[in-house]
Length: 324
Image 1 (cartoon, rainbow, N blue to C red):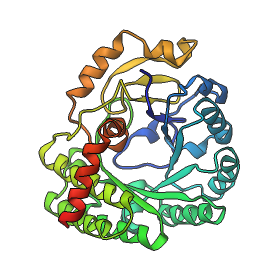
Image 2: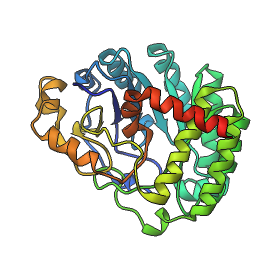
Image 3: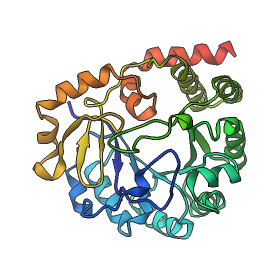
């Protein structure tokens, strides 16, 4: 069975210097050309196009075009730090012609001073907001803020949620984590935050989400509640689907079961088709390793498993909704 979801880093170069990520140290060359993305499997239904900073690629619209050509039924979500707001607006106009439903997520890791400190930009916060305004101006409908929780910003989770409401965009969150093959290893003090503060703020958000008439908001409240449980217990409520329903690919074509642990499968450039790569005999061991992993609770590594248990998940969401 071919995978349904993927995180694809189209560049591992970055213009930020985030304290919870070492990608900015890369000096990448010979990254995949747009046409090489035509090998991606048509089975994909959700693709997070990320980096580094994807808008550093001057050919980002060609890359997206080839990804959409290969994966016609996939929802495309582009994740950016939002710094290059003029270029992003220009490129998103072209990308919107390729995929009118394309989604955009901008990293906002706190209020202005905190965000700028975390991201290493003196004006990153304002530029991120300008990117969201520009995207709204050109008609991008699916927009949101992504927040990475750490000891530096845990006290501002609810503030960022309120900002998302003010801007009328979505908000998602995840906890900072290590990755030998992607983010790099970060200071333990950054990952270790006040759990009670974290829980209190996520619960405030959940109460607001469940008061709405939007089932997607109820689902987010449910998922974020499970993030609280994960941070406390380090147990995933659903097994990881990496190496079966999900994969990560870096900007030079290396394919891994996921982007957190070392689970290398092969390089896209070495195969005529993605199916040949996916049928690699290593994949069974990679999937078994992932099922035992407790290093993250993220939508990307849970989405296909959640999809397989729609009825159970739906009942749990309703239970949470009506329990208040």
